[in-house]
Amino acid sequence: MDHKFRQYSENSLLLLAKLGGAFTEEDSAAVPFPHGLYTRAFKASPEDKLAFIVQTIEEMAELFEEDLDAVSWDDSRVEDFVNVLVQQGEGLRSCMVNRMKKSRKVHLYFKRLSHHVLEQMGHSAEAWELIRKEIRSHLLRLDLLASATFIAN
Image 1 (cartoon, rainbow, N blue to C red):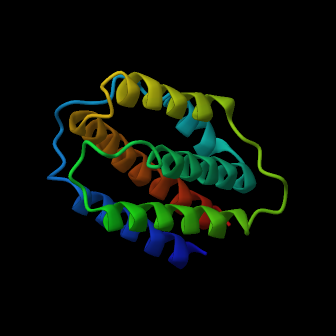
Image 2 (cartoon, rainbow, N blue to C red):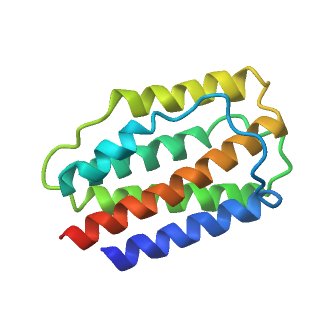
């Protein structure tokens, strides 16, 4: 599971990087992620960690189903990126024993990203670059969380 997760993780980060230009440290989305959720996820049981990772991946994939007309990204790369996220989420979900507990706060965060960044900025290329940067940050943090999960087991 660790090997497959890393493979999907590397692919998703590579595809995300290929969508746009270089990532900069400037600008961030106007909707801060409730970082306490990551802190709690790191302390959670392996099953709850997996649920957090799966939900976050699914929410990211759903976000990229929105209007991408303003960006000049290659449609097939976007599709490949979303497919990797979906496959990664499905693979992890298949490892779960219990029914997945969804976090309302994670869901609301991605809803706010959609509304406060994408919709209010008219799904502009600038808005999507902010989203791309946020998604990269989450993918990196999820990779750390997954590593902690696999090491603990």
